[in-house]
Length: 411
Image (cartoon, rainbow, N blue to C red; front, side, top):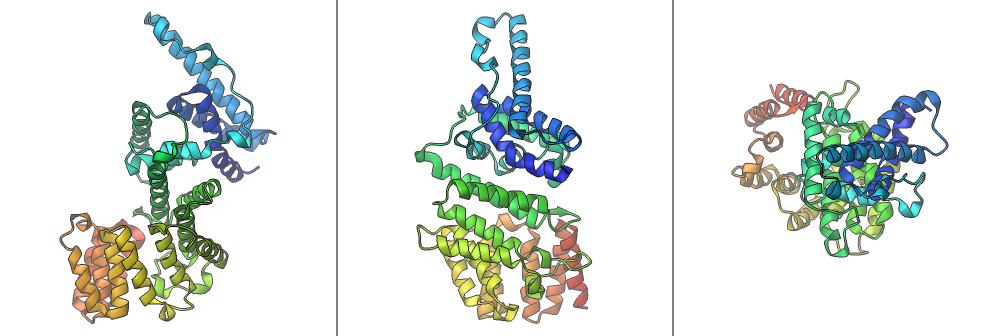
C-alpha cells in the first residue's frame, strides 16, 4: 500500500482508535498522545511491511501499550513521592485494551464533540480536531496554518488541558446541551473548510488537504446525524463550493474570479450531490444559516453563465441569512448582491456602513470589494487605489497578485 493510501486509512481510523483507548483508560489527554505515537509508528512500518489484517486492532494495541507504559511510569513517580495510597490508578486501567472496536463502539462522533468543547477557542478547537479526528500530525497542522511546530504543539496541549480542567467526561453530550455543542462542531468544520478553500496566507490559494478533511468529517457527522438539517446544509455548502475549485485558478495558478471562471471545469458530480442533499433537507425542518448559504451556492452553481445568475434570489437569501447571523461578512456579501440588482452605487452605500466596524479594520476583503464596486460604477481612480491598498493588506500571495493585476489593468 502506498504512503498516501496509508495516510487516508489512518485518518479514517484515528477517531475510532482514540475513542476506544480514551474510553478504556479514561484519560483523553494521554490517550490522544498515545494514539498519535501509534499512528506515527504505522506511517513508518506499514508502507514497507504491509497493512496488518486488522489495522484498527493494531493501532489500538500499540496505543494501549503506550498508555500502559505511561501509567506505570506515573505510578512509579507517585510511589517515589510517597503518594501511592491516593494516586495509584486502579488495576483495571492497566488491563489490555480490546483488540477491535465493533461498529456499536465507534466513538468517532464523541471524539469530534470532545474536540469542539465550548471551553475552547475556535483556533484551539480546529487544531485539536485536525490532530485527534483528522489524524494530522502536529507538524502538518503547523504547516497548514504557517506557525512554528512548537507553537502549534503548545496550542494543542493547552486545548487538551482546558478540556481536562473543565471536568468533561468522554461521553456524547446529553440532549440538553448537544445542540450547543453541535453548533461548535459545525463552526469548526466550516472554518477548516474556509481556510482550505481560500488560504489566509502563503503561496497557494487552496489547501486541498484541509478542504478534503472538512468534507470527510462533515460526511461523518451527517452519516451519524442524518436528521440534523444544519449538518446536511453544511455538507451541501462544502460540496457546492468545492465543485468550483478547478476553475478558481488558471494554468499559471493565478486567481480567476467567479464571473470569469470556465464553468465546464466545475465538478458536476459534486453539484448534483450538493443540490440533491439541499433539496432533500429544505422544508424537512427548521432552516438555518448553513442551509441558506448552501442555497446561495446552489444558485451560483446552477447558472449556465455569469449573466444568467439569479441575483434577485441571491439578494433575498442574503437578507434572510442576515436575520439569522448578522455580521460584517454577511453585509459585505449582501452589498455585492445589492450592487448586482440595484446598481453599484447602492452596493457602495451599504458597504459604507461597515467602515466603522472594528472587525473589518484589517480585512482586505472590504477594501477589495469596494474597489470592485467602484470599478463597476466607473470610478477608475478610486478602484485602482482600493485594489492597490487591498493587495498590501492580504498575506495571500495569489490574492496579492490578483489585486495588483486588477489595479494595473486600470492604467
